[in-house]
Image (cartoon, rainbow, N blue to C red; front, side, top):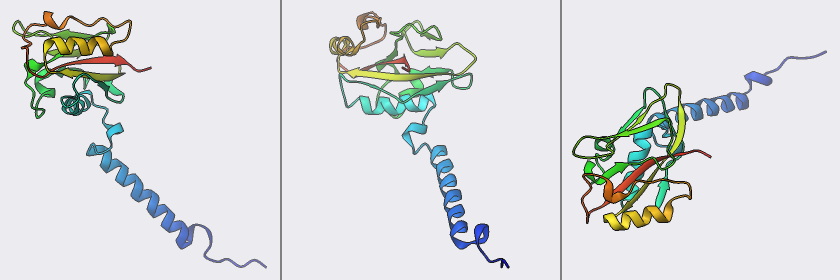
Length: 178
């Protein structure tokens, strides 16, 4: 007749496979918590700040984050918070909305325009956050013109209150995911 042996779930090969899968799952969770995996960085503030740091060394180029999610817990981006540890002052950065996305509102104070990007909806919404930097008002305007899409409606850089010429300046804006 048939004789039972240690095959199937009790075998050492199967146990090793299960241990490897569990270890990889734990590693994946740890890496996403520590924001080590770039694609897992879906908080708008963190992803925008990381991109802003790299874009200051790439004047004239438009770069965008991977998809980030705005929702009720991640609904605001302020120039003061995203410029921390970047070497930029909040007055060197401003928000724009060239695609005129109805989900967003841009506001500022009487001294400086476009300091706060606010998501107005209650459900989650995925966008790309894009950054263009340059070293003066004129070259930033030129960089925007070179990188913009035909349907984009950027504000004139010279019309933004608080921007000072002859220093690194950056525009940050959301784009629809395609």
